Image (tube, rainbow, N blue to C red; front, side, top):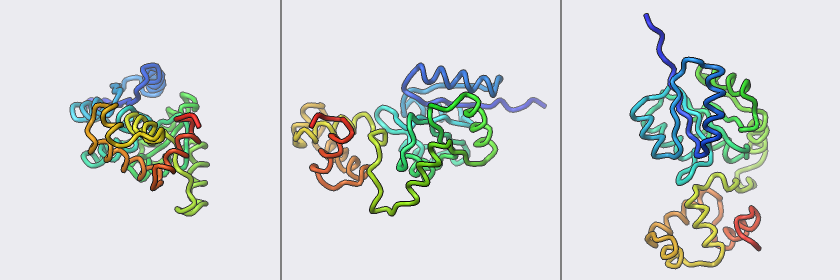
Amino acid sequence: MSRKVLRILVVDDHPLVREGLRTAIRATFATALVEEAGSAPQALASISAGHPDLILLDVNLPGENGIDLARRIRTTDKRVKLLMVAGEADPWSVKEALEAGASGFVTKTRSADFLGQAMNTVLEGETVLCSDAQAALQRAELRSEAATEPPGPAVLSEREREILRHLAHGDNTKTVARSLQISPKTVETHRQHIMRKLGVNSVAALTRYAVRHGLIQA
């Protein structure tokens, strides 16, 4: 009886990062079938066609961040294992990733050996967090919801960050819509999503956030 071939999907918008992850996967699972996707639509298409066993999912994707994508994946596939990969571990991202259905969270600063161990742990049905993610989660648990700091810009999609910059510069909805060639209703929807994700309730707060995180000049 032949053994089932392990299928792994790598989702990251940077080709060099995907190549590095593929190499790390090969070092642990030499016979695995590894596929790649550079965006949320590509990932969803690959999942529908191939039904992977494990997905290495970047938190910061263009158009739709990895955490929102993880939620979408979970609505259609409860079986696939999700391992989030990020440039850094902030409290909001780690907490939301786990709540979205991820079984692990590792940063890109970890070694290939660590990633291999993390993949095995997740495939065995357990949860794994790198030390940075553990520390971030502890910080999130120590402070109340009201005192939680806004998450980093990585929680926003590329389009949301673009709209945030326009709003922070003082552009109104119609001006943003005309500049980006989208409808005012779409701009307003993005604005509401941005405020929800960042936990702010005014354009002034969005402006302070954009300055603090270097998205615009003060």
